[in-house]
Image (cartoon, rainbow, N blue to C red):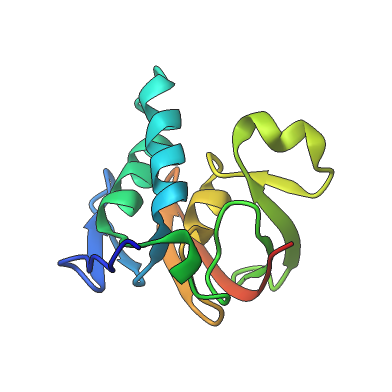
Length: 146
């Protein structure tokens, strides 16, 4: 069984291209999800802001064995309920890899801004960062796994 590896940065601020500070909460990711996502990112020929954000999230995450991932943490394949704090709108989506998106009417790709932001959050956590020069503030409300 894999032990827990703690990130050296339990909560830190990320300096974006616009020189705006972003607050990122602690996240936990399973070793399986991390490996799948690194493999995906290595295949992409893209240096977009979103890809860089996902790389940084994986680097700072606490990584645990899949069977040690808490039930209240968002992971690939989880059904997530989250709220955009700026609009008040709630969304229910299944967090998936891009190639799985066609199989889910309510899927959200891990490569979207909201999908990458949800990865590893625990219920009740909020994340605020700037995407394409605009603030995005999301709160994870619920997680369920099949």
